[in-house]
Image (tube, rainbow, N blue to C red; front, side, top):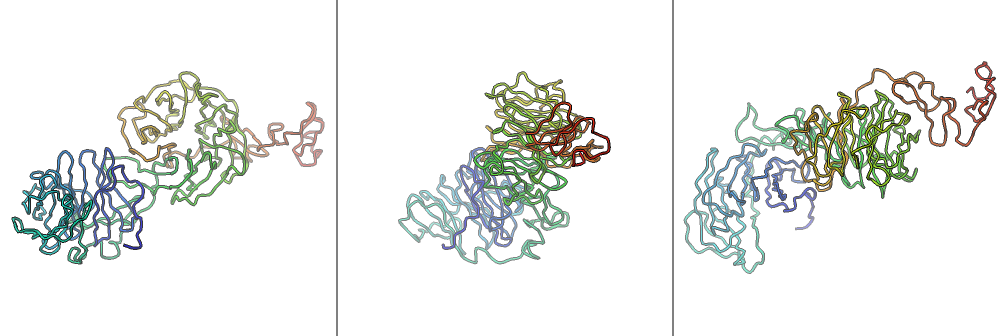
Length: 602
């Protein structure tokens, strides 16, 4: 009992882990994980790595579980409204109901490894039953092994004997496993309180054998390996991924996936393209133990995931999109400048990060290394932001001073020509995204509990979804609209044109989801050309696409002079003077005469 290790500690349902079984040949661990409205059968390596859901149900209630790695099956008991004994393949597929009669409240099961028969104990029928092993897919008639047991719970076998615990009598019993045996059982141990289960540690209960997954180092599989009881298309086993996508026998991060944040995590989810989605693994393991994460975005070309954290540890950082981890790089933190970054958007054309700052009531941008910070535009209460760098536009939401008069604005990528395109019937627009294909904006209102869309001018406005409680962030992929709901603690999607066919993609998260993005190259297509491509548009500092024209901006503490140059904010010149880049003032009559009158070639 020493050297105890905690191998499953996250993602456990409110009703707990109820059954556990070991595949000692492939070294996999199976367990049932019970949530209030859904139950999962999961598998992982016996050290807790590569955890994967292989069966889920909102109607079945898998509880106790046993595995026969020699015959390559798992068995589980359901003692819900329709009690039964069920068999699955080791990969969770090919479900077969074996017993539905003479079963009422089954509490534990075990497998006789000498002949592979299945035994279980029923605490309502006060009896022990068995069925003979079979590969057939038809229901089996159970045999009574022993009855008139006051309150049997756990069950175990060893050779010719069967062992069980009785919760009422507080004893451990032993008897013959042969059906119909009526002899008095032996009391092995007595006066034991709160008995629940029993297991016998003996090599006869785990006979040595080989399987395709025990040979050649996990069957050459990178993560999980499942042997088949019956050959499938010439194969007697398969590799599977707990995270990533399967390529041959190896698992790698998907090229396209959903990435989203919760308060303390950055998580991922496979995009549900077809009916096999339920078998898809998360592209990467959740990045946990973070602090108040809000916004997420990405640079697909450079494989970077960007994120924001708000107080108490405000920062903007990035992690490797190919292998995300808690070992992220901080780009900008509160120690560098007082800030509270919420929404984040990446300009993939000019490689700049934009963010909304609720502390400073402004929108800023910077290079990906944290340099060249520019205050782009002042906003009363900025929240969400989305960029269309190929069009030269940025869009952002404003909750207003008291969070009661929301607006959506459009401006140039330089923050100029700011105009409200939505300013009525809006309260707290929390999420904002762009459908680049159709040139439409999609936005959420957390207070009005709606998701709407409009064009880049704010016209053609249409309500899409109202059957949600607290929609927060929103994004688009193909024909689908995806969003997070803080109150329902899930990810949802619906048809983007109509809002119909709403479905839940991720259910009942422990922490409410916040931002969401689709990590895909299609979201960051190359532009035909930018006015800033040639000589930075003639700008001394930073150049921005302003609706197809080059517009210059200067870093904080400097202002634009003569449309191109940057000078200190504290220096001013008379109207008839030219403001040199070094702050010097000279007569406008001296400009453009070929002489370096400024002394800095400006």
